[in-house]
Image (cartoon, rainbow, N blue to C red; front, side):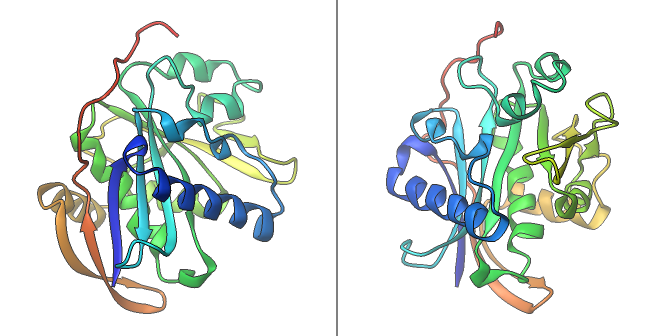
Length: 236
């Protein structure tokens, strides 16, 4: 059984470390990227950092995860640090009520199952209903742009070259995407929107997911414990 749960980063330091090390290992070994902005560890002790982690039932083996970072005027969103030097308009785009889904990854062990392409992308958008946010940002690799569109993101053509940047290396293209209606999800695929709504209404459930390699059971617990957040500041 694969389990997916959400928690505030300071509430589970051990799980944060497993998440962090797994993400860095994937970037270094399989993509040759030593450091990216979402690879910073500052978020681990930050109250406005939400972790979604994919584990086995014992909570000792980590298969992947993602992070939802709330804009609070204290810890910059990874997208600000990543593309701010190329296009300063990103700083105006981030405001109280903004958040970013970032650091999404899955291990080679579950590659092809749909963990990153459906489970994590969907779970990140599901969390908006519990959070003080009204818009989501994300910086996508080419392979994940279509995943973003399925859950409601659109390309933010106001940034960079119609939304694209050379990041994190000169031979990599990243696309800035945005959801401006995290509750209604107007641009999401209708079937995907229905699945997101179902998870928002039933945050704790077990369901069968179907990926490229077949079906598998996922136990979801997307109810965030200790749901209080540090103050969001209006001035950055």
